[in-house]
Amino acid sequence: MTTRTRFAPSPTGFLHVGGARTALYCWLQARHEQGDFILRIEDTDLERSTPESVQAILDGMDWLELDYDEGPFYQTKRFDRYAEVVDQLLAEGKAYHCWCSKERIEKLREKQMEEGIKPRYDGKCRDGGEPVPGVKPVVRFRNPREGHVRFDDRVRGPIAISNDELDDLVIARPDGSPTYNFTVVVDDWDMKVTLVIRGDDHINNTPRQINIYEALGAKPPEFAHVPMILGDDGARLSKRHGAVSVLQYREMGYLPHALNNYLVRLGWSHGDQEVFSRQEMIDLFSIDGVNRKAAAFDYDKLNWLNQHWMKTLPPADVAPHLAWQFEHLGIDASQGPALEDLVTVQADRVKTLKEMAEQSRMFYEDFDSFDAGAAKKHLRPVAEAPLRAIREALRDLQSWTPASLDDAVRGVAAELEVGMGKVAQPLRVALAGSGVSPSIDKTLWLVGQERSLARITKALEYIAVRAAGQD
RNA sequence: GCUCCCUUCGUCUAGCGGUUAGGACGCGGCCCUCUCAAGGCUGAAACACGAGUUCGAUUCUCGUAGGGAGCGCCA
Image (tube, rainbow, N blue to C red; front, side, top):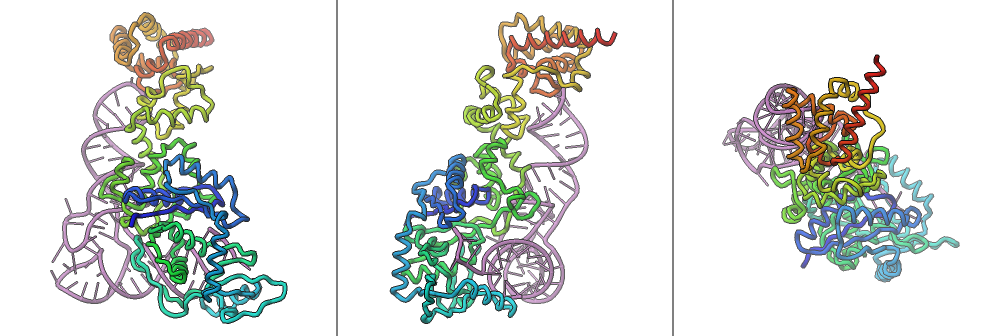
């Protein structure tokens, strides 16, 4: 039987890293076993589901390049099917109508809590409830009262729970709409899912779902419950605590592959290997190797991986993502150095594509003023001679390459009998406007001949004005 | 309260009865150096606790403590 996994988010918010990792694991497991990966949108909560959230999930999957073989399926389009199964269960006596009011259930719960027992439905209507005039009943699943439910979790190992811990859960509301624990079962059954990979907050739901499978005469799939992801500080991820949409990682300047690499390694390992290509992830990943412990999200490590991939991936693969950043920052990168060249020289010095774009602005746009500190330190009268000399040297340069530019700068330093720093730093401030930029040959190369000459002239003017002002 | 789950450096992890407890991120130091980086070398840093089992426990068992999840007509 071929493996079929599914990712089944509910569209009540964006796709966050925890969900993304679950999706990645589902996708990897399916790809590893050459099975199918299904996307299903669990939108039965009409109150909280929104089209925006659906789109955010789809966009997130897309950005992470997690392609699915089937779907997206929407549960709201399957209501007829759920109703059909509810009727079947009702007809077979495996489910029953319940007229108990929410108030009664609420009181019951309070009483049970006081008594120190686990709150659950007491089964008042289990053996024939009394219809209440004007009240439409819910449908409850008749859970077995005896025995245990056992399953062998692919991540947690054997788990057993006694049926007397379970109550008769509601599977259909008064308006006939189905509830979660019921729809997952029907869907996973209909969609022939063989392996359910999901967050470990569902462990407690699993036994009751298995009971539903059995009532349906269906073979339950295998389960793999993966732990959640904690915030930077080890605390649970929440809205105000770093739980951001995966799309925000794009804005922050991370490569989708870097995030995938980080996520796959968060809770799973293959010996000491830290870096995985997409193909290596597929070849080596196994859900059975996933850790049981919740893991804390560490931006430092993500940054490291992101830089690693910016340096390692072919520049042409990184360039489109960098282009997105320029566009997002409103920088027109059409006139100036090729993005591939930019990636090659900047990848060593930034952690994110956003930083790369921000620090590359000067290759595409002229600046109005020099960084005050850098100018004060380097654009002084002593810099005049080196700047004039380098301007002369560059003016007639035929070959504008890093190598020839390096020769030119070194030549000037030798000629004036000064260290490289005496030439390179003033030149850097002239070209970049600040004291920080790539190595001076690469900076010249990327700024280009015409712009370089103009900026050196501007720096010389600045020095002259400043000298005059000090007189 | 009840049920289930979890516990190796700050963080992510390797380990699968005998190891100087390994790697990675981050952090410190040194080297390189035209700035910032990157890179190289190097250093500090962990088995939650207590009982068993065993010749021997990080590893197996049971407790304790701490943490998490669930107990919905949410998913």
